[in-house]
Length: 124
Image (tube, rainbow, N blue to C red; front, side, top):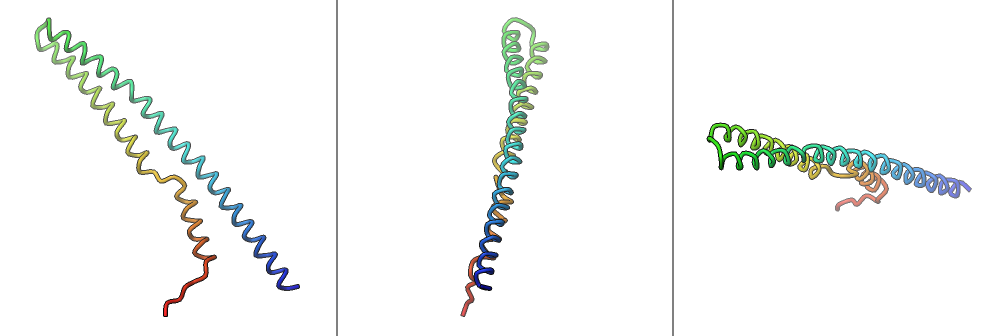
């Protein structure tokens, strides 16, 4: 009877451990989804800077063809600043998305559990 009780305890423990891993994975997936959503919102918010920069560059080019260079260069400078700021912001947000490893905590916990439950191999 003691063996049956111990076996039942092991099965119950493994069942609880599995349930905890699933709960951790759900929490981590929600956190990862939130992170990705915020980064996509940043990209969406910075995209108009690129469009405004393009608009200023187009106006500057048109004015360059018919006006004195000094005023035109001012429009050109504003357009370039907008474009550069927008591109830098989008690149930084995209890099942050690339470096994020989804479900890192869950994988670490799963590996630790697997290491504990697998039979140890002793070297001769």
